[in-house]
Length: 307
Image (cartoon, rainbow, N blue to C red; front, side, top):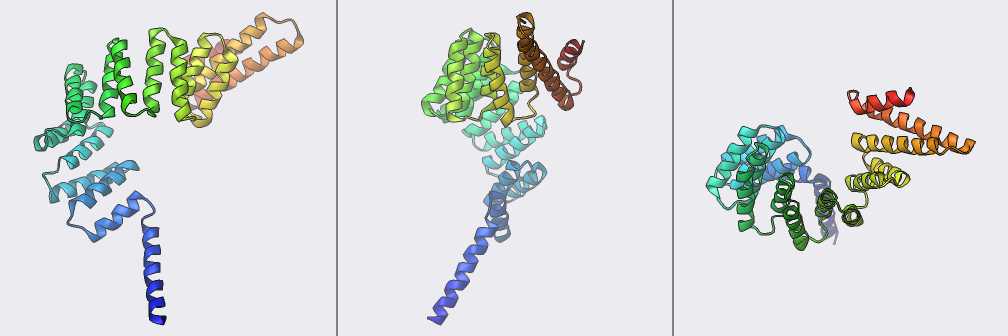
């Protein structure tokens, strides 16, 4: 019994130690690499862990080690290509993705990323071909539908873009980004109420989605519902306090409220409200200029208010 108890303590401590080591993906794969230096998968997975925390140089180093061990894995080339894209090294990114497709012409992730590269270069026709090819391999590749929707939207093919975004929701009904994109498309099409409906669906899934909050605020601003717009911009800024666009829109909403109270002044209270909103607008423009000192719109508006 004494021996058994001692073994339990030893094994229990070993498990506890491992739990400490494996507190996250980076720790986990760093530990695995130490024990499996000549296996490519741990190096590849450690590269992905480094990439996830934006340590791109270390990610590249691990992927290159993985390739030296196994130069026939398309996935490692895809991962390298993705990091090079992040770093803006487009030529290297394209080279890695093309190498991946030489090994496996059905690597749908390589096709999607290559499509992204073509789109960045302005070669939208080739980009569409790559995205469609990726969907032939994997009809559930959501990134491909999303990319196609964005391209069609850029081309002004609004109904075709809507169709692509709706395909995402058939596969993934809780995809808040698809609802958000539909909100943008319906707003562009001239259906603000339907746009708001789509943004609200996105917010039902992700309540702290600042872009959706801001975009509803913009629509309310166009409708003259400035107080409602202010509330939404504030909610967005609670999540992303340095969002210059949300701050600018909040300042403009304050400015419009100040004008409304100034035009319809019938009491000291209303005059005080107008001054209060002007002050808030100036303070918000000042915050914009703290983040982006060269913002011409904030400079012009704050000068006008002070005058």
